[in-house]
Image (cartoon, rainbow, N blue to C red; front, top):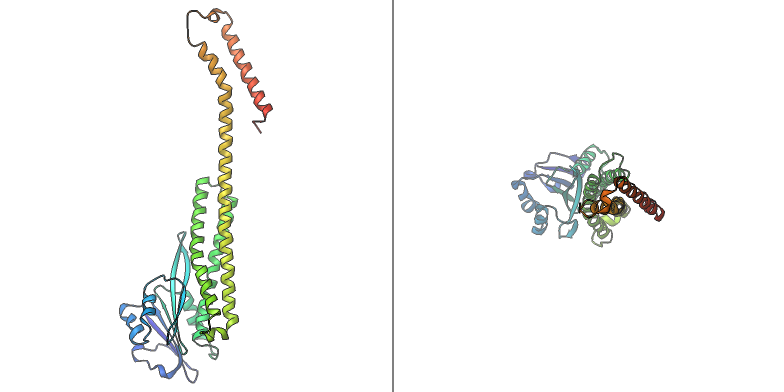
Length: 318
């Protein structure tokens, strides 16, 4: 579906403009939104708007790295928005063709950010400050702002893993932890390229409109810097939690092995005595003792108590 908003030269807003019959000279600028376009609608990118074939190819092929390219009639931007679904990070591409008197947004999936700005433009009465780059800024700002709830949700999940308020087993905790690390890795692969894109925009000599609104785009860049630091610090936290759990697990294993070693050490001489008197040779004087059974049990008890006391004195039970 393709929707078009046109701002006429006398600052009136027109909607529901048919693309096949539009006269772009009537408008000081316009916004065309390609929302989940069909194969037939894709042809307008080349034959109506005459965009560069490389830009069209990048728009059609999904999940390009966030970037910008300069062309004769427009600047092409690739951006990403993200959402979480079933503990999996879903990335969606949102592309912009921005010229002096037009902006074209292109996306294969529904874009809440585009919808919000579209409705805001329709409801706005003062259109003086609106132009293609202002629309681009508004959509980009909404896109970056929508990263924060996902990061905050991940931080809350990490706090639950660290505190283990649900008393989950070690295996379940480690599974949750590695799922969180995977989410953070996917976020880092989106946030860092977006940060680099904003840095390139702010330092570009070709984007005069960006320089005119430098403080606005700098604010988005600051948000991306903050997001990048949050993602990095949370990944470091997951590593710390992982190392803590592994150390705790190793400590618990060592304690179990120590207890088993002590038990084995105590029973070793007792087994030795029992083994000797279990051989049943004929020439064993002790077998004829009237109280031999009780004396042997007493000796075994004394040995066990003595070894227990010795191990305790050595500090093996601390």
